[in-house]
Amino acid sequence: MTAVRLTGREYLRVSFDRSGEERSNDDQQSDNTDLAEELGVTLGDYYSDVGSSSARARTKRGDFTRLMADLTGGTFGADLLVMWEASRGSRQPREWLDLIDACRAQSVKILITTHRRTYDLDQWRDRHALMEESLKAEAHSEETSERVIRTLKRNFEKGKPHGLIPYGYARTYTQVRSAKGRLVRRPDKQLPDPAEALNVIELFTRLASGDSLGEIERDWKERGITTRKGAEFSVSVLSQTARRISYVGKRVRMKTVVNEKTGKRKNVVLGETDAAWPVIADFDGSPISPEEFVELFHEVQTLLGANGRRTNPGGGAQHVFTLTVRCAECLGPMTVTRHATPDGGQAYTCRNKGCLRVNDKDGLDDYLTEIILAYLARPEVYASLGDDRDSDELRTVRAQLDVKRSDLDATRSTEAESLAHEARLAKREDKLTGEIRQLEDRERALTRPNPLAELFEQGPAATVARRWARTPIHRQRAIAKLLLNPELLGEVRIRRTRDSVSAEVRDRVVWHRE
Image (cartoon, rainbow, N blue to C red):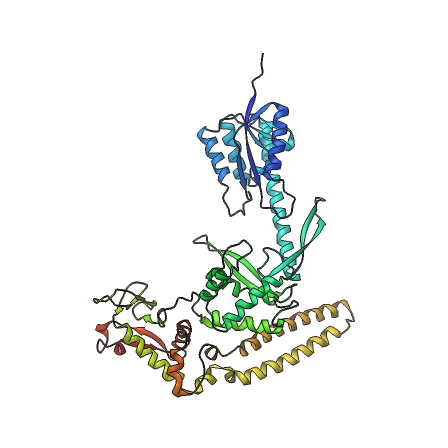
């Protein structure tokens, strides 16, 4: 009499693995197939996922969901569920128990390849054994999580590289023995890659000289400059690249915070520290020195968004005052809308709620331009926005830095007379290091370039209108946003016609100052 062959379907899962310690789905399937042949099991279609099964996993496992649906819906269609090891199913006890219950309800047994054992879920000892496996898997997951967090914290304190390699750098690796005795790769050094680093330096240099991100995007597209994956550098990618602090040999420590109401995750910056890799310009053949690049980096941060100022990133600016002018009703920004007037012309419209509209767009533009040009014609405005304003404070900060650095040198050169004395010296060194870092940040802020001088060509008052006319629109917009704020000329708010003396644009403007 011919024995009836059992049928089985596999569930394969491998975590995202950079260590080389995980068995791939192909490896798991090979082991499963060998054991199935030995036991006389015919394997059918399989389920396969890539990703974590721990409670911290953010990515859903699509095939695991399909597996549970097939089991609960009675469409699994096999005698055995085959898994390489128990943790492939889940590292969450509740989820694992649901899988056991679903298999038991459909009289499906579970074959674990590494155990070389088939578990009959109608037998309480087998169920108990698998439940213990789920607790072991959870404990292993928690232990691994603690180890990873500990390693990341240690790497951060030492400034070591980890995670994705920033564009512009190359990374070397060292082979070491893991806790399981396997040879795995660990990051060693991160150094500038000259070919990519030159592109990074070009990006910062062009932004500082006034080129928009949109202009750079189009130019790089024509020249065939792409990311490592062969994708084009979009405006958003260029913007992120221009804000990457790793280029000045720093790294930022982040913490993920979960909003209790919405459940959304948000990264919060906890601080920054010196990294173990050099500044992006620190390589043979670099057109600028590392020190010059650090100054360039902070100059670009000022242009991109320091103190709420942001140049137009897209390079497609057509209207100088759009988003700078505000609706007096809802305080939302006003933008230019085409075909908004009876004659098909352009008008300023409240973007948030459509509270009101200014049909005389040209009249408002001319009025605000007149105000800005009158301000720019005053010679003292450059001094008021430049470094002279902070010269006394800057001298004070630098004097404090000299004192703090001398104290730090003296502290480090002092020999400890006891363990208690050594602890006090270490505590004082940490305190002085923190104070010096704060003072250096303040010094950097006080010596940043004059933002107005960077955006607008200086010259005699008589030529201000001509200089404004030849200034690119994206720079005009940045100047408007810089000047038309409550701390300088005032924020421009437009009120309804019925709340104004007349329908004239000038009468509808309210200047909000602080």
